[in-house]
Amino acid sequence: MLEGPSRPRGESNMPISNPRVLLVPLATPEEQAHCRSLRVQDDQLDFVATNAESLQEAAESPWCQPLAIRAADSGEMVGFLMHALDPDENSRWIYRLMIDQQYQGRGYGRAALRATVALLRDLPGGPGVALGVVPENTGARQLYAAEGFVETGEIIGRELVMRLSPA
Ligand SMILES: CC(C)(COP(=O)(O)OP(=O)(O)OC[C@H]1O[C@@H](n2cnc3c(N)ncnc32)[C@H](O)[C@@H]1OP(=O)(O)O)[C@@H](O)C(=O)NCCC(=O)NCCS
Image (cartoon, rainbow, N blue to C red; front, top):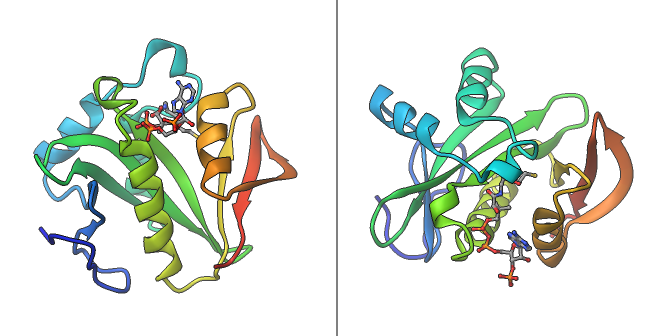
């Protein structure tokens, strides 16, 4: 794994790091099983698909890139994210983001979001970064707004679209 703030450019299989977290491909069936075992709190179940559902979707959708979120100090898998290229509008989406319930509230979500934005801005496919969030998910909306995402008024299904302007 890489240490420190440096990270490779492009869509490689190398881990992406910032001081708090590493974003690492799920390389083995054991890692995927561990990822499927991560859980959000009961009152958050409506906010995000299960990791089992997301990994299934990724297996069927080559434009989806699933990554484990690991604590940089211990290497422990603390969460999961998936990003995807929208071929229609040429922008990158943060399609899933979750931190396991036992690791929430320790800064991993913010660190993972920042690392993901940095990763996506280095990839080809348009400078914009977007995500969808259900209206009741006030904690996540607060986090995204604090990191510069703006609600655009677009609604997809139940989700409000938030977009980050190009850097
Ligand atoms: C949203 C989520 C990823 C945040 O991860 P986290 O590691 O708990 O968040 P952090 O510790 O980095 O906190 C970052 C900010 O998130 C916001 N936040 C996170 N959870 C919150 C909660 N339950 N209530 C209020 N604010 C919350 C706060 O603004 C917080 O900043 P602060 O600590 O300065 O107040 C995590 O709570 C989660 O996995 N939730 C369930 C799944 C989900 O909703 N995913 C997003 C789908 S769009």
